[in-house]
Length: 163
Image (cartoon, rainbow, N blue to C red):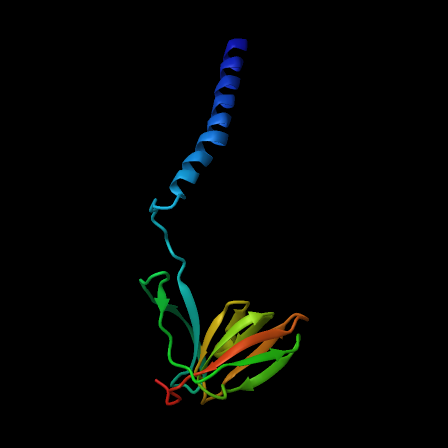
């Protein structure tokens, strides 16, 4: 029994040494310049708010497609005419309203929530991109969640005619 325990202990120790020394070395080698590894990219999603045929605001998640480029991939969005920064106080509530224009709304800081038809709620945190096009119909509810202000970058679309 003692011999088996000693063999098990030696095997465990050898495995720990290999795991501590060899695996980081292998990882560092593959992370070196010139070594190519396959990567899976997490999709970048945009929440699209639009007015449906029922005159209600609906939301859908749309993936922004990227094309290869150097030094970075590029995801084309619709043309915009300018940029505005908006700061809304924590705890704010904006009852049913329509978007003032077709625009991208990108949350930079703070947390928000949009409610659309059927009580569906969409959480908005830093980095969240909305394409807001519900300029007709009932509209949506916007809340700032928590006490921190929500800061957004609003980018009006050049084409205000809709889809």
